Length: 114
Length: 113
Image 1 (spheres, each protein chain N blue to C red):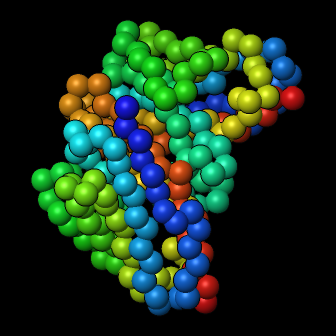
Image 2 (cartoon, each protein chain N blue to C red):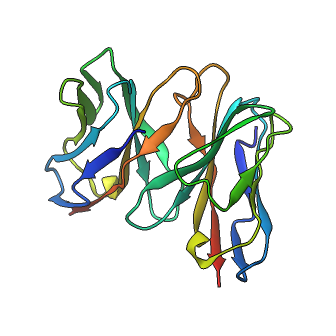
């Protein structure tokens, strides 16, 4: 198993550009989520999914879209990047039936919007 | 919604001393409280967790206590070592149904030799 894989590891965007942060897991995890991490603010939940076809908003969903067409993938889309979205983004997932109990994080994507 | 406050934001101790980090939560329905350790440039990793049906849990030098009445929980690290230096995050969740894990702002722990 490759675990939770995030790509890219680093990205620089210009204001107004769009991009997709990829998150994939090969462990048949049903629960996946996206967090952003900013200095002094901990990890804030953006969106989460409890299974294919089901997504919901977290604490800071504005400016981000998600979809969950397969169990394995949970991409995060920035439609029009803003400097305020400069952050480190972490994807997390957990095995079936464990909910947040078995949470593991990907290695993160460091995004800079200029 | 749930809100988690964490204190202190920074903590400096001498090697061998104990370290205590405290968190409070707002939603009395929360029933799962994990702690994550994040080393510089790395991903957060689960180090210990506690569920609301117990008041204390230990794992070697690490322990977590929970006071549901006061809605606070704490991480205790004894006999600290330099490799304990990291950022520690507490979190809270209401399990069952659509689970959300809400994090505190983090505590930067420095253990000095």
